Image 1 (cartoon, helix red, strand yellow):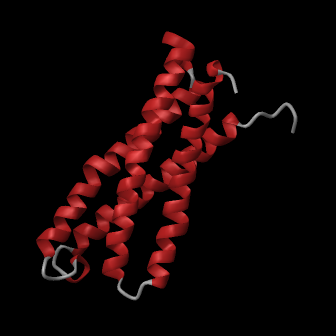
Image 2: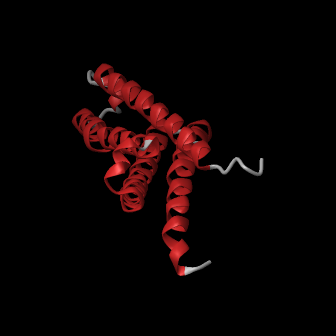
Image 3: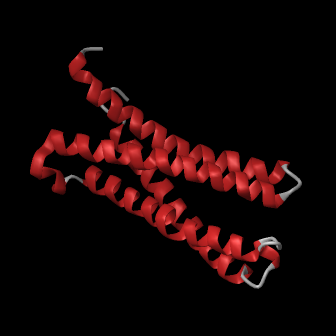
Length: 156
């Protein structure tokens, strides 16, 4: 690998880490936690931490991908469907990470000593959780579109 190809390699790696990690955590690791651990409160705590860490990875990867595309295309980047999809994925991620998740964490804290699902705050928590799930699915599907858009098709 030449030095000039490192930014391209990092862009591909960022895409794989972000999209692959999103799918691995959300649709593999977290369901396994809830099916394996008898304590759903503990499973939820661990799942929340996994989503939090994956969110941080996603933010770093998205910033790199957006910067890489800008350096490659300049002001024409705004016409790029790839750039706009990555930006939209990042926006979804930021809504989840900086908007919904902190409110859900606050609801959990307010519910103590009860589990939030056994508290009067359960309805609000379920609503936010449902919204978060819809946004996460949207982000995941956009990630698949991005990955498929990056797969070379000439030799397939």
